[in-house]
Length: 587
Length: 35
Image: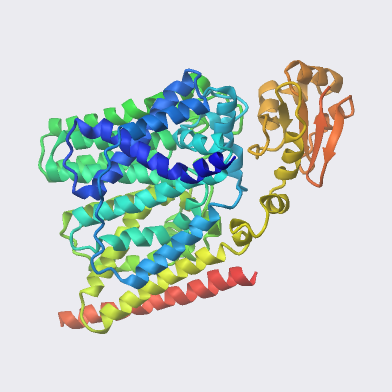
């Protein structure tokens, strides 16, 4: 028990060192000339995570997805580690800024100890690793639409899940937030030399959406870190002209494509970037084409397996998106790419910065807001030196990402991969004003501090409901009982100790707390059409459920299906009832 | 003349940022805390 607790606590550090080892092994023979130790560390750890995740994927697809497999590969990574001391340049960064950023980070760290209650974590980010470990294989499960997704992040979460520790799983996402900040430090230090290298990195850590996401086991910061690594590699390729940087960029974007479909937008922008750099350097058409091919092939080589898997399972490599164009088995409702925000008109585009700042709810909820600093500082972009090439690239990436996001699903979480560039622009604007003498410099620095203090205020405000449980002043059971409807029924269920492997037909998607195979009733209905086939014969349907190995039926009181109510009268025993659910045992 | 223009821009920038902070506190933070 104590060993498991210690392992849960040290898991993020072990993973960092292990992936640093894997990265060193993978990149060692290519002799990259990194700019400083920080960039060396950042890119090696990212590649290491990708390599570790891919190895586990291969073993998982082959049916060897056991906790032992996870830990063997983690320890192997430690064997390859050749640790080096990393010097971080503090320079003259304001102490107040560092303290404010560290306090904000501390608030996020406190929330790591809060039990999981969000829908995405409970229904797939943490539940899929659980079912994969239970079945010892990474498989496509027709009753679970998310199992067709690229799931590299979920493979990383398997470590935490294997320890039954949501804290460990969430801390993996947390360290990707820190890693992104580290990457931003490397990028601004080497590519945008007039910039205080810490400014953008510290700002990134305090932005409300980052602070919010760092304490959740989602995949957005993992995506952001891989994509930032890829952009950094493209910048280096531009400076050095060595093709191996393009391989590296392609591999990192490939890993990002293994985390989330959304990476495709960024890969499109990166391809445009490579073409634009080619034109600006007056390269021949064939040269530009070969650059794009090298990048594209690396992306496909690294991420292809996820898309082939989805295609073979559902007939659509991007299932459940684009089903009207690419097809798919149509087991669940296809997901739409649009549908949030304030619409797609020109007026909506022009007013968007205002809306996302002052009405963040329609853009993925207040938790995912970016705060007011971008609306305040981005107009200052007109004061940047426009002739500097890196700035042109940074602005280009930010603007293109923003426009693409506007025409897709307007959820601020999905614009996160562009956030590092917005942070760079803000710090560039700040620097430009700081160079002015007199009151301007001091006032603008003061304004920046106010914004960071507001971010800290939001981070503290977020602790209001969870502070007690994170500090162990409230028990986890108590907290979960009052906040997570599935927890009481799941804890009751987990104490039943059934004779056969438990399998629940469930109207509840939030499955993480059940130690069982939880089949989503809605998907099961779409696949079997049981509601039509057995409409007049609930008894026969009950027999079918028993034949298919179902042991329990979980009915949600807010989502009644008449036939299930009829089945419930035909023999199963009601063993549990609370204000949200009926739990029946099938026998 | 150029210096004057730049200073005007700086004044605009500073006022704009105070407006954003005021609006944000009033319409986002206080609204949430209040309700």
